[in-house]
Image 1 (spheres, rainbow, N blue to C red):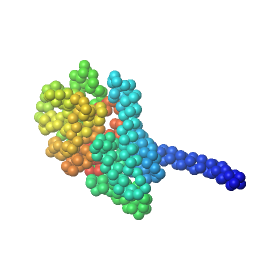
Image 2: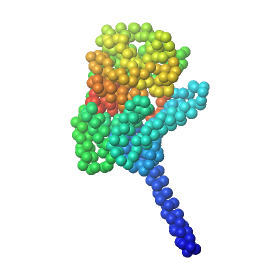
Image 3: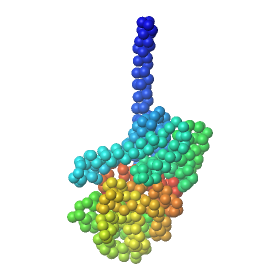
Image 4: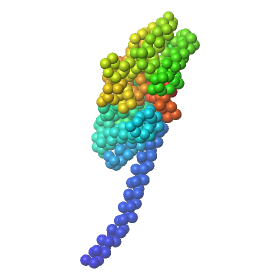
Length: 411
């Protein structure tokens, strides 16, 4: 018995370094893949449409996970890196809150939604039926309710990889994701790459036909005392552009620069008459309060040749604007088409946050738009990656559809 015990002890002592070595190797592999996932998030989401082509590689890292916990870690690293601008931007946006410090809001809004997205991919992870699992993960992160936070979606890469192919381009992107998630098959990957090269070679960027964006720098609209001076500054820019672009058909202004449209619309009547006389239209970002409560509609309101249209913000930013539990909330129009005929062209509007999501543009695509109109109010995100990413996503959707886009921002 003594000999046997000594043999067991010697075996155990021999296994300890082997187990430790294996544990260190597993931890090193996990750390490396998490770093790669973070790098994919950084490279893909920094403002360049071309770099969006790297976004689908995140499913390779997802496939390489050996457990749901690892899948969560990898996707969490990806989403945190892609949405890094929220850490500073959200803190600035909520800086005047009295309930918590600004940094707490910044950290919370950066960490929690990304954890929800990463957890969704983790729950869908598994060693079998990977294509089906991928499909479920894409659906859940693209559609409400989880899709309300569905930024940095790899499907956005469709515009970079398969421009001009519309729904076919989206379907081919899903096929590419399926191949990468299931198993690397050289023939299939080569075929999809050949299609992507051909699509990019044949694609010719479309210029907006007489649509002009007007960027502003009037900052936040929270200071009611300076609202009139901001309004005057915006109107001065519009007047200058009217004279500088007599051939223009539509001027697009950023989100919310018109303030309270119920109160301020009267101040736009003179400019509206000038635009009408010239056969021009202006789309002005503003909000319209409801008569009986504090809820409001965030939209682009039209004046001039095509007056009285409201291109509504279908998906207001959760928590900061859309708060269904609060009477002081923007109204959501999740399933509206977002397509309106302006100056004889079917325009799909993507107001700020909805530029980053999948289902608003998918609903618009079903209604055959001829131009994409993007409008953002990013005074709170100045100096972060967020404005560049919004423009990146808007441009990618336009490339996918093979139509022009116009994008206006306020800082």
